[in-house]
Image (cartoon, rainbow, N blue to C red; front, side, top):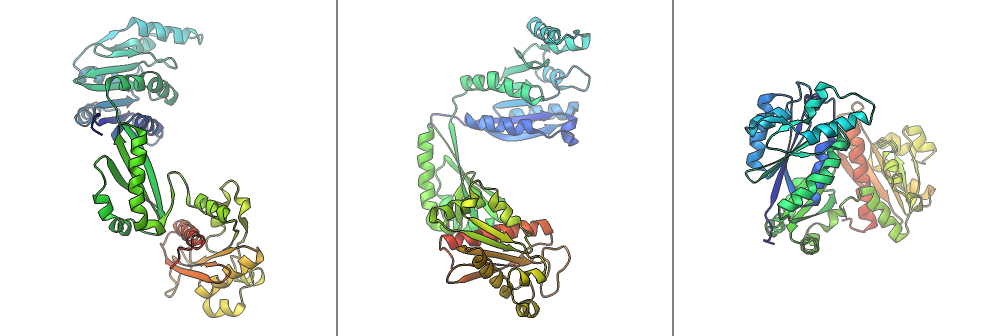
Length: 421
């Protein structure tokens, strides 16, 4: 694994409109993905306004960190477009007319029946230390610098122009200059355990990872993704190395792993139900149909999703779902007793293998001292038993709905796989 040197890149997105939030910087995201494909590691993405000191400072900082500095934006012909003159200043060189660039700009306007103005002619004036890179889709040329063993490339901020320059010119040149490693990612997706508890369970495994494999914790709502990133000479070697490490990981946290890479929890549920030819139905109160919505976003969900009932008011928990009035009055809608009857009855109504229920105080109002906002009961009914769980969530309504959905789907997963305690 030693025939390569890690190549680092920094992306500079230049323009006040990005800082003001008037335009979303999709360019940096796309560039990062493309660099990752060829084994270049992006170490920082920086957004800089149209300010001389800020841009020059960003240049200086990026040069210290990265082997490749890729810039987008600030290449127009007006006074507020500073990238070109500041690159000339940074590299201590002049700006001169490039005849080839002028002809390209002239042709661009002639094909559109427009006159080349003196302002547009300025697009063909470039720093003398740069290599002119033609922009076939616009008027602002790309500017390639190779100084002190570092690559600099300035591109227009218009996404389709930038992508063409990256694909046709930047990526091929980077491959020629740098001996690049392969980068391989695999994501292990877990649910039902917090980041710190998960880290504690796998700390010894993590400490013994080979030097060319890095681990990152990526937490989200009720879930934690473990991203393994391997650097090396061939993808085949890296895949094999990562799989060996995952084999060591499985015995430690198998109960919490539901899938890999892009698979969602609802997709994993569908895969398991199809595999076992089993059906599911839901009775949702506080989650308001959100769980059924997630399940039915998966293509082919009609193979295992029987249906759902959303009896938001107690009257319909009784009349439609068959929850006894005695239970509702004695224990309340948000109770273990209620979700037991909800889950068991919805399972029978839809002739399903699993009946899932949710009932809680989503908030922001409606809580009591006994049952504060965020109190949720969930249940999963099967043929011979019913499992329940009490959740103590947040003060945020939408967050509570989303966390409830994750908890219900995870309870269903554990029941399908018979991993319940």
